[in-house]
Length: 418
Image (cartoon, rainbow, N blue to C red):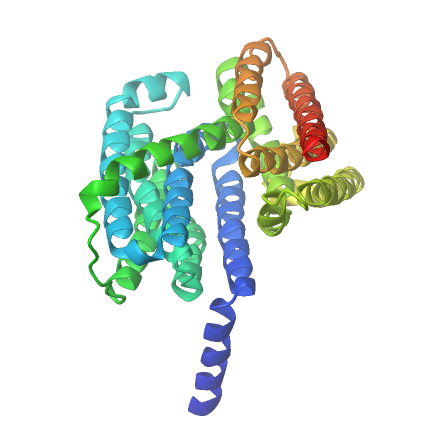
């Protein structure tokens, strides 16, 4: 038995050290996030879950700083392996400072968040501010591990994000069914990957170099802010509609809209691996057009399948978003699958813009965000808001496709002239 257990453990460790292990760990992380939302929707009901969904959407938007830190840390370490110790120290120090500043700002803004989302009390908003700290720090740690290609500890970090979230979410909500309890579970769970990352980094000492942490800290911060802007624009357009619903619709309809968005996030998360796989090819001058075309074709086909499945199997989809309490949105769940498909395509195009170092992508998506808030606030029903959001996403998507075509055509002309 001991030999069998050891062999199984060795196979699992080898798997997690590979790129396939990263894909599996990220899948578990997304399932944990999705499972937490399903459990919350079912145990809280539309009213309280609508409030929680608004808080979680804001946390997701704020976590764009985490993604910026991760991208910057990984890129700098991969590009400058001789100065890993200095880059790591700068990235971690920048991560902690940024986390504490952002957390303090959100704690001070708790009364505004409480009023905006019509929360029952101040505590969920305060817990949101506190949760920002570990979420941001984890981004810097994950970036260091990613840049060093230490896939096993990075896989463990991703697993530590997803599993504790759903396990602690169930435990806390069974003990106390409120948005405060759910956010308390989120806060506790968010520290688990930080502890795992600290353990992994502490077990791998770095040799010192002639470059010091203070010499590159400013560059790390500047790159982090630059990387975060484009990602912030995408996360905003993907998540602010639930905030608009909370402000514009009544409490019950806002809860129904939030429940429908569980389908949206499932369709968005499903093909994330495609973006990861295609991004290196999109960064290459010769293969970028083919990679983008393959991505658009694959995501469009998968999105169409998801929309059709949601329409035909709406009873099954209703079970996953919280059951009969959300029956009022069952006939419109296919609309939320459409939103997810559009957002998956938008995500691909945003990363295509980053791969080509295009500055206009973030501005176009930013205009889409402002339009979503303005036009979305005129909606008076769940279907009306979903339709408005879908139209805005579609317009931004078409413009980004046209922009990519123009970029590739310009590259062809430059190549011909040369």
